[in-house]
Length: 76
Image (tube, rainbow, N blue to C red; front, top):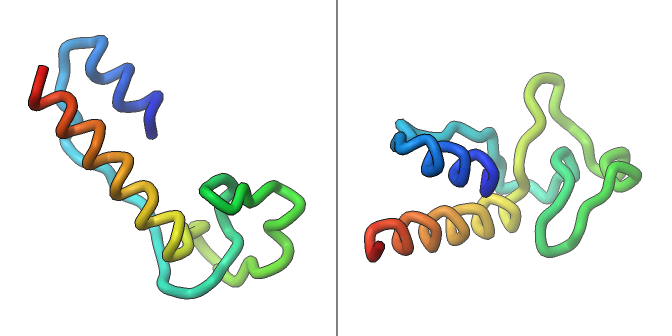
């Protein structure tokens, strides 16, 4: 997401939005985040039969990251 925002900004465009799947459940369907979920961790709690979802902590972390990025853009 950081790379996406940087590329859009470098091209002089504005992101029209972002869509990610998330759940309040404690899943391990996406790598990364504060708990550093790795590819080997995915098997622990991978429950979706469709698109992988961020867990509640990953979604909250990403929301703050996006808010900080957008706030910095407004100040510049």
